Length: 209
Image 1 (tube, one colour):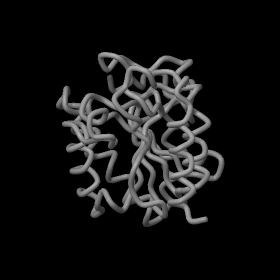
Image 2 (cartoon, helix red, strand yellow):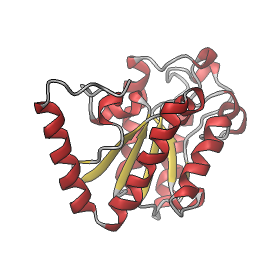
Image 3 (cartoon, rainbow, N blue to C red):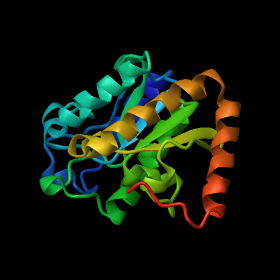
Image 4 (tube, rainbow, N blue to C red):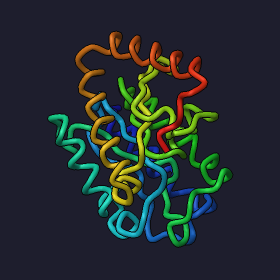
C-alpha cells in the first residue's frame, strides 16, 4: 500500500467515526493535503470557515500567507504536507479544547507515522504544545530541536502574523530557518541549542512578546 493510500484509509476512518468531537457541527472533515513523500510537514490548529467550506487546510487569508512563506524558501505548496491538530472546524473558530485535541491525536500521529517527515513545522501554540507542552511560543519560535528523531520548528500561526507587524517580521525570519535546516541540519540544531541555553542562563533576557 502506498503512502497516499494509507493516508486515504486514515481519512476514511475519521469520516466513519461520526461521534468524534466537532464532527456534528462542521461541513466536512479537513484531513490534510500535499505530498505524502514530503520532507516537511506543517501542522496548524484547526480548520476555519473557508477550510470547512472547501475541505482543504489553510485556504483562507492565513493560508494564502502560508503559501507565500513556503514560496519564500523556494518551495511550492504541493511539495510539502499540510494538516491541523483537529480535523473539523470548532464553532465560531474558537480554540480547540484539550479533549478535542486528544480525540484527534491518534489520527495526526498516524499521518506523521505514514509520511515520516524530516521536519515538522508547528504553526501556533496548540500544535507546538503537542511536541513542547511547557513551551511558550514567544520564547521558542524559530528554534529547531530534534524530538523523537524528527526536527521540530515551532512557528507563529500565519493568522497571528496577519494581525501584527512584529509577528509578521519574526515569521518571515523564522521561515528561513527551514532552508538552513534542509541545508545543514546538525549545524543549525547545535546553534539553536547553544542559543537556548544562553537565554535560559541570562536573567535579563526578555521574551519577544
